[in-house]
Length: 402
Image (cartoon, rainbow, N blue to C red; front, side, top):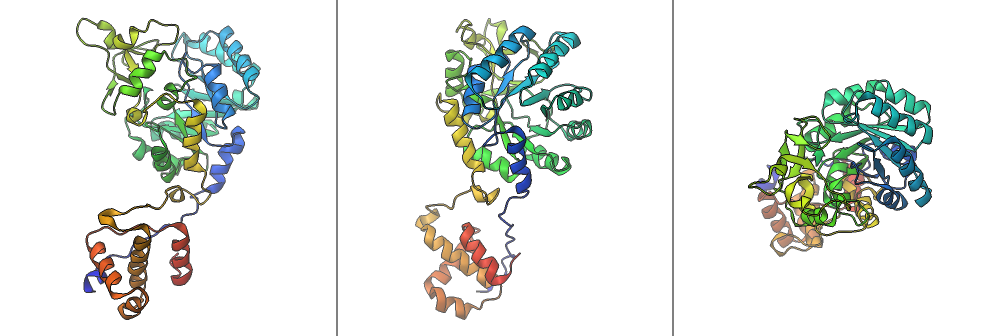
């Protein structure tokens, strides 16, 4: 048993939510039942998609980039005719100049959607105006410097966007590195995770890193209600994780050199492959092979066209367990080398109890010599099984672990 005694003590973190008040706050702030946010996509996230997401309990966002102010007002009112649930509008000052942005902002301030999300600009003067109108403000950031500025500017919620994200990206840092760093400097504000979050596994991982919710773009691009052309959606479903490439060339409606991520268009005599963009239902389907189509690196998680409600439901499961971040990960139902989940639990108990002072003799009497020896062997291989919440709580009470 000397081998087991050399095993370092396993530190088990409290499985309660890291900050449950923050997680509850983002939902109450936005008036939603689940912290699943549909990322805004210019020309592609229209009233149908936004209303479907909000009806399902998440928060849909109208993508207002390159949308005429008159059309934006119509979209807001059309969305309200489809649902009485809250929704948001996304503004990006990268098209049409300051006057165009101001015109769109004026529409938002007049119509007062629940949320205004902002990206790729200086919003020091915008945030106070929106908050004065009673609108919740979200700012998408790609670096700690941007996050600190958004905090100083008074943003209510931060969206931490990793470089894995599809479409236009602001920073050069992966979500795994950026997200916890932003959470640490957010001063209690909710932080939403963005970048390659297209299924429940990614959503759970984001929650474990401190996210209060998820901001999903590519996942909703492949939804039935999205305004993307079927040829675009088909390309998304067939693509794998390697397909989307980081680019700094041309992208439709943006300044040359603006970083973005897209699936390469057809090579050869096809200069349109040098242009990043998306295609709508009304566009020529041939453009799906010519343009480089916006998509994030999580595209490999997208396997079919689903309803927006189904996507919201799946992502919601990552935040449905009130016990907190790690609590969203279920215990395994099967184990390596043919071990059962029950034997895993017992062997984990043996190791934990031995580490906290229970003698080999007592453990052998309690669990049997054979299981005791298996626990020693498996732990020596570095395959310590995972306990569920109830068993951890029992150990906590017995040995005062925390």
